[in-house]
Length: 252
Image (cartoon, rainbow, N blue to C red; front, top):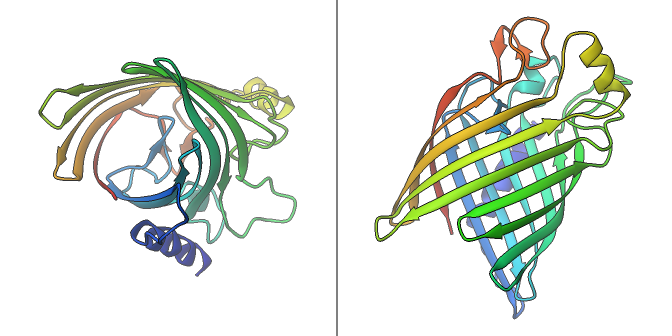
């Protein structure tokens, strides 16, 4: 099936580090998670996921990559053969003194058998981030249809993150707050109908590096509206409810 081939390709790339021209550095990653949360919303109906990606960075600061994960939210919503998310991105990183910056473009791809006239979940965003010491802030801006909400250009996700490495321990502590704000006529209609897609999320996390294998535990929650009929309520599950997530990842 297409969804399986795409995810296998992404995972295979995460283990394949080809020899590149001078100035280019490849890297890869693979993860197992007990629940794939994105911006606080479960993409797997509170189930586990396998994920992997491959990146290439240039000494100039330019980079590009691909990342894939198993998902279930589209299939649960009635889209056949929609069990994979496959993202592609490119950008540029640099620093001005002690302040780091990162700008880029990200394309979320959700293959599946969509009904004629249905709005696909595929989404295009541009983003800009700054960082100083242990704190970073990022703004993502949607260029059109956004995760299945049509005519949503101008939708934003603003976030602030803190990552504190505990010296000589391999332990890192993290905190996150974000807000997904939908714009456009479709989002306005959803809100007027009692199913507002706009919400905020937060997360607290701790991780430990065991010789390159990182074990993580996080607690995430949102203020997304709960209950039947709401935007993030699928198959009797509130996908934005508070939950703990266990993860095991490896970067190479």
